[in-house]
Length: 417
Ligand SMILES: NC(=O)c1ccc[n+]([C@@H]2O[C@H](COP(=O)([O-])OP(=O)(O)OC[C@H]3O[C@@H](n4cnc5c(N)ncnc54)[C@H](O)[C@@H]3O)[C@@H](O)[C@H]2O)c1
Image (cartoon, rainbow, N blue to C red; front, side, top):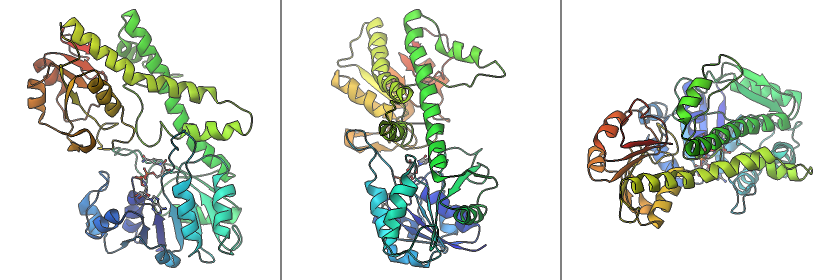
């Protein structure tokens, strides 16, 4: 099937999808409001680490990036991959989705398939997207097809890709689902059909809430073991030897990224309409938000034990992105930790091979050897592979390790979460 696929929103989700369809011989029309992204794609320059520029350049003849929605009139299917953030008072902000859907409605054609991929609360596809698209005069499920299929991409991951990660799909009608299955069958090996868009929307939220709650559980344990003088990493390691009924989650400095700190609150907001308080979600958010403060207190204690105060201490942060292998800074706990330490008067520097500069903080990544040599304390916030943390533990005056990567070191200068 060599369809023409339209993709709205060419970010972490949209650009890899565009390349995947182009690799299978489809023509792709990518629309983004950010003209810099459109220009970068035209120049074959990728801004997403999972998409090497060579690969993008190789398929550039098939990927037509534009800021103009009118081009989508030629597509057989249009996939919506715009952000679904929270508003400042932590409610779903469907602004980008509404804007994109309205713009699509103006150029929508009979027989097109529209699929929403953005993470959102149950009911969005049917109650928000369908009516906006129907302002075109075409009826959803009759004149055009509408489906929801949540993206599961895990940036930086290579073992599970779009191709071998099962994809959940639901249509507004049976024929909508069949059309969506035919489309995704081009780029995914396993499709999982569910009966309604609401079930698919909620399945995606369950996946993220599951992670958020389990990370919070082990983070709470880390705060307790800190007081009890027990090594939380040893406890997790031991529990994980159980071959059934246990799934390993690691403690850390808090949750980052566009998904886990945000998506669960789409459900708690929606649940309020049904008189249900989603307490696990709220509690997990609360515990995870406390972690940067707990980590800063650990730094403070480590410096104190060495006869130093935070004020004036030179602290080097290793890894500032929210997770290993990527340069994504969205909601990164490292940023919160840096801000808290600065408020206490510390002098900050950092090393991150994926993040050349933290422009808003006036910092640039410095070579590893330099930051280790020039600091009173090295704080491991995100452990990128390729950074020799063993050597850091040997060379640094003091190390606070929030990721358990120095576990083999029993040196007195190393303190772990
Ligand atoms: N990043 C992930 O790992 C991930 C994983 C699974 C699901 N998701 C979900 O996918 C959705 C997109 O996430 P992302 O990480 O790709 O976001 P992103 O910010 O990287 O990309 C979104 C793109 O949409 C563009 N955009 C915004 N408004 C637009 C509009 N009106 N018209 C056209 N383009 C517009 C932005 O300029 C941006 O390039 C979100 O709902 C997110 O929750 C993300």
